[in-house]
Image (cartoon, rainbow, N blue to C red; front, side, top):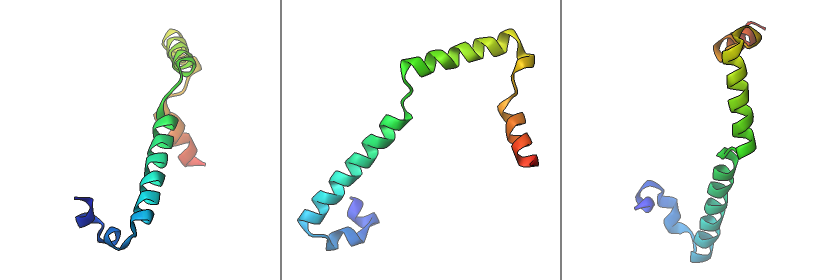
Length: 72
């Protein structure tokens, strides 16, 4: 169980455990919500990819962008 990995949990009161559980669920939901792209965002990315394929000279690769940032 999780108690073996986090022995300090055994010292919490039942109320504190419930509060912690609620906070963990809320944090997990926030992370899940933040990681999902909207349909509009997906469409924008698909259009950008199509533009880059059609005319690669107008776009910079992620690797080149990271390298340029590193060179600053």
